Image 1 (cartoon, one colour):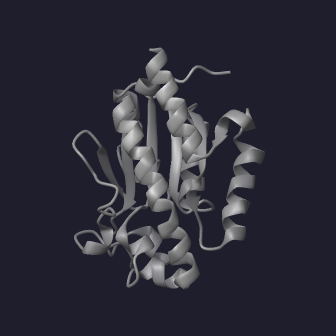
Image 2 (cartoon, one colour):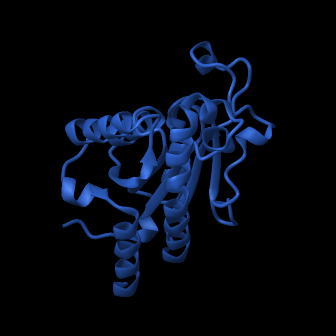
Length: 204
């Protein structure tokens, strides 16, 4: 089993902005009430994860849409999570706090439209814990870019969500098929990850 080193790990929270979760946001309302409830349900688990990460020395990264009218993505989707509006703000329950990295993006994957890769390299990161919205879209594209750049990946399965339960499960299955090397180690719940970090910190 790979040794967990919190100091060389990062947890990436994808698109945990108001637009994606709160009623009145374009994405949140497009998904409907059931989606909003499921998106909101991952927030307490994410809060526990980020609090444990900060204690363990795991780098916390917010990779969140902050669009401008010229963005390519808006050829596909109506305006959402627009830069400078409240809808692009990170959910206040999650942060950010001092020491966290906030890396606004304008594409599905932050590797393409932010300095995510440079920040990972600067912090000596080799392991990425993936969380956020949506399992089958932005988290999938971020995972693919990370995998193809050689990062070790861990998906926190109950801290990810999508428009439908089927889309969420389909995203996880895609990770299993194309990216996972050791499923038992790489697919973890929030509670398991918090325990892993605590154990690694105690052993250090």
